[in-house]
Image (cartoon, rainbow, N blue to C red; front, top):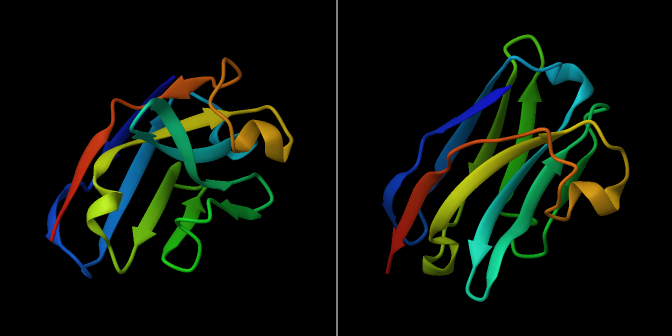
Amino acid sequence: AQLVEIGGGLVQTGDSLTLSCEAAGLAFSRCGMVWFRPRPGRERVFVAAIIRSGETHYAPSAKERFTISRDDAKATVDLQMNSLKPEDTAVYYCAATKVSGSYYYTTDGPWYDAWGQGTQVTVSS
């Protein structure tokens, strides 16, 4: 299984950016897809998730600014990020899991079947 993130870059505060994660070699439509980013003192923290049904979950920092969506036909998951802030600066990773349950979608752990290599987002002030 392989996940490839694209779309990162350098933007200014208040700008928008869309990240995309392209999947190959896994049963994409059966997976919950999640975006993570590292935080100081923590390896990776949950940003947003979209499960098989299309239901979405967001971290408080992402709610109302970020939108996660998926296209099962293309095996892609996007993260639309609006009103970006300097504290959004991070490497963003997508991950896939077939495990169900909001705890698993919102927590880093060994239940993920695949991780991408990450894409850097830098927001200048």
